Length: 309
Ligand code: ASP
Image (cartoon, rainbow, N blue to C red):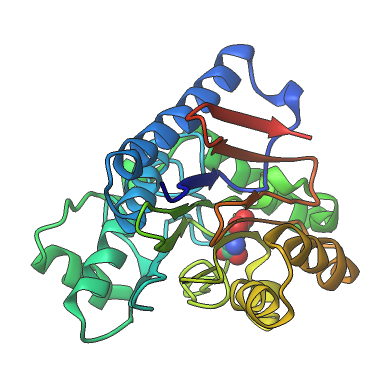
């Protein structure tokens, strides 16, 4: 039987262990495990990698512990603008939304854009209108807002005044959720969803909805979802770079990812991580921050979740 594989991340902006109670850490790990099971049950049953990555991301968007959907970061004006994308490695079909303000699950909207078959990328009010027209769940902004993100915005604003933004921890700044999968038919898929950066400019779009930067999947090469300062992922076309290294240099996903995260991106001093699955089912989850929420399933069906190094 062909191998199947699944990996997820909840962003490389993980809080120091001491900042959450044991109960909160346990809840975050539980939500990662639920996301893994949601995706794994689909591919284990012969379903598609595309459905699996969407299902896993929906669980993390609904969790308050990650920066996507409910629990997303606030921008400089104190509201949410959400970005998401999804890609099918079999057909190279892809869909993305950026700057969405009322779509409960932006990844579902990205999928709907992909299925529409007409365009790949829809932004701002048009993304919300598209989702509404396609019958997706729409919510008020307050649905996305959590106490932690309100506090993080206030702390970041104080840092701007004090001139200490550079000393902000990765956790104060950002996060993202993503999933990559290989199904029994040998097809790869990737999905990513984010609230972006705390205190980001209104209208700022990161790498997460940009196909080739934060998300990419191509059968025979790999599926990739990134997390970290999006501007650098866009400049380096990180997710596509992964696929190129694997396809043209014959590197394993592990080698390619290490070269990008610990090589190409190292000189910028930014937080960065990614998850990738290769056409053979091999999985890699590198990051350069103190932690990255992450999970993977080993071929025997065992789920694994981790937060710090
Ligand atoms: N990549 C996201 C962005 O730049 C943030 C993150 O992954 O932490 O919007």
